[in-house]
Length: 250
Ligand SMILES: [Zn+2]
Image (cartoon, rainbow, N blue to C red; front, side, top):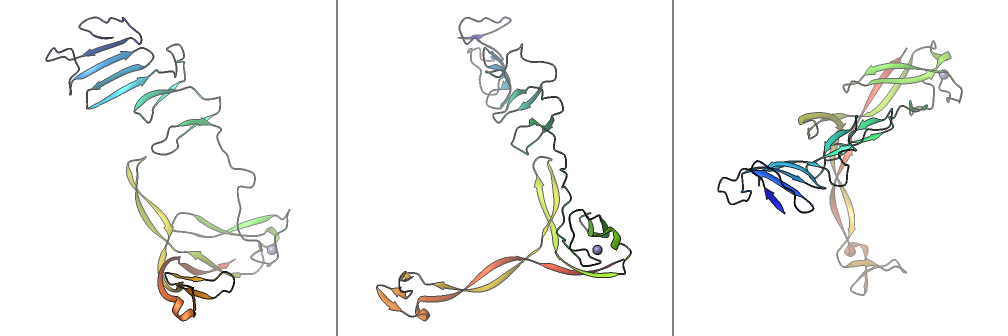
């Protein structure tokens, strides 16, 4: 039973609920637009304005007052309630999972042993394949417009070999602007530049089939020729574009 309190709080039934609110028309109800404060047993504490919004500290089944301990943190759940996240194991890191997801504690990740991997299998200077156990050096060839450092691998003993010209084929990139909901700001990333290409494709006309045993083109039970059964249509496709760049390796 709800007790509308004016100066005191009374609990009579379970779950006990106590409401404190502004009751301008004295009808003992929270009316739209009126501020309220509700404490409900086994549920939580809600502070709000009716039909405008609320803020609720959820205590339903998650924890009791005795469970809250030093190091706990609180986050907003999907339903807008404030809920508890117990402290993580020593050494864990709090990880966010993007807008609309709740944070979790987890093992921090570090780079693995083989965290530097490149596609090249051949030394740029001697043209011999790399073998397990080879010592290699990376030669910086440029800084690209994304701020990355481009390198090529070579044997340590090949460092002093004469100049070498290499040709690298790589994607052309362009700006892509988008709204970052998590940070609340516009952001830019680099994406591969695409071009639209129109190609011709031969298609089977509607209603025409291929006989699975004879391979004949069929229409309405009779054999027809390919001319009749097919039509050439234009299809638009997106393709990445590349640039060819020459580097002189010293
Ligand atoms: Zn080499």
